[in-house]
Length: 242
Image (cartoon, rainbow, N blue to C red):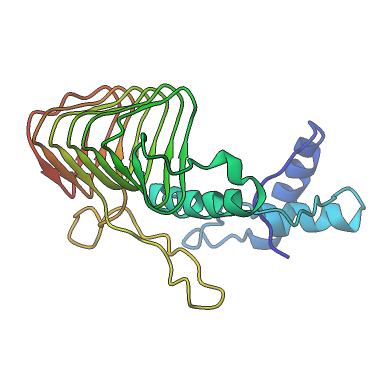
């Protein structure tokens, strides 16, 4: 069993928090001013364990699919597994190959309201949200296109998340670096890397295009994070564009 880190608390929790903070200070405080007592209280150990002893703490146990999402790369990883679950539990939710439709590779979800060119190539592991528009000759793989996103003609998007109402121009390339764990390794998990390395550079990861971002034609955005409401005027690599 694993703690998913999701809690539903009643307002009476503040009474227990106050008691936990007092007990924390009583255990750690001393008169040596050079050794300051940490003000941080460990929720699981210092609050929940006493509540469990008082029969005030309960667990909701589920055997359904669960995946931690602490980064955009983790969202791409979870998207892959959700689509795989669709194949076994709700196969009709996945896009079906059609001679008149786009070319599909692997698992692909397309919302019924989305507009997708029959010349596009999609997959594997692609989710397209409602009212999104996918133009002619577009190539998508291992990515999520959120509501109202527009991918214009012959653009390529890989290992990326395209935000709500974002627009990717013609022949643009949006690419991230996969951070998935080894699927052949037992108990593999996603390693949550620091955002920056020791040299202050952005660690390679999934590319995120924020909501209402305009990426012009023939621009390359690689391993970058673009905050919402930006209009790019050139290519970027390993940067946060604010």
